[in-house]
Length: 359
Ligand code: NCD
Image 1 (cartoon, rainbow, N blue to C red):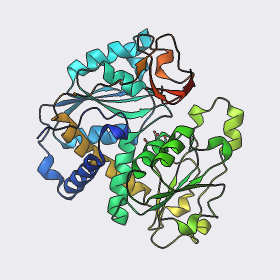
Image 2 (spheres, protein in one colour):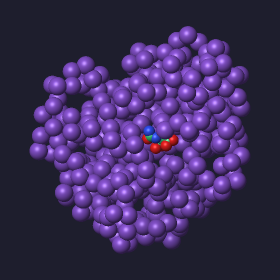
Image 3 (tube, rainbow, N blue to C red):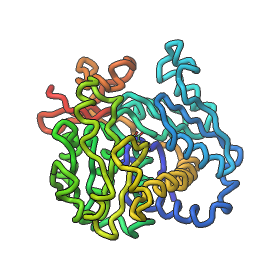
Image 4 (cartoon, protein in one colour):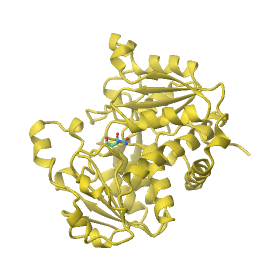
């Protein structure tokens, strides 16, 4: 049977059956890690982190080491040729010939797809700006499965920075594909979920409501997903200052939550969950971070040994005379990239960063 675990740029690169397969494999690895300790012997994984990271980077590295493989890479691009002005294409072209799998985090939206276009091995998106973060979503799916025993029939509250929080974007897109999941979006209007994700919910006939406070919905939730306000993505410090302390989960708010609700957070936490909540058995965020390593072991195993990609990476119309209007899109600086747009009615969507463009 053909193994189809190729590049992971967005969750929809894999089918729901494949997500389930990864979660099941991660559960098996978690129960019996020794059995997998030699599976990647002689293999190399490159981790290229252009942006800060603790959990994602180290859990990927620990995952590869626990599979018996080796790692190369950088976590500070200023120590690499990037500081000399090397473009993404050249870095990826070279590093992907040194390694069997490449994991990249980058500050520009759509950078993971841009990297995959030029890679000689499978690329895994470990976060592309404020856009997507699929391996955090795999971590979240494993956590829901371990904690609540299911990925469907859930009422999920997402709180905080829904605009720039890439973990939220990938998670919503994934959970919308399981039956009967409902979403409560808890944010200020300035940090609301982007329209392209709301459109995704509408097209998947998923129920969602938008509210302003945790208090008005916490009692109805199976899971509350808290997020950090993404300071580094704001255009001005003043705007960040206005948004930064709006949401904080406390012990007193937890009194109104159901006994079987869980609290998740991709971490790092700044001040959106009081440390007093940590001892509540419903606080699942540290267990969630631990799950990240097991699901990444599963992902490395599946992608490492899969056949080369057949599906083309760009499927839209190429219009090199049209520029994406998102200033954070990778096409703004990586000038060699074909400008590819997918057409929906009168709207064109940038195939790298999902920005809507009226042509
Ligand atoms: C998240 C990220 O980098 O997007 N962290 C993570 O990967 N665990 C969330 C965040 O930085 O707030």
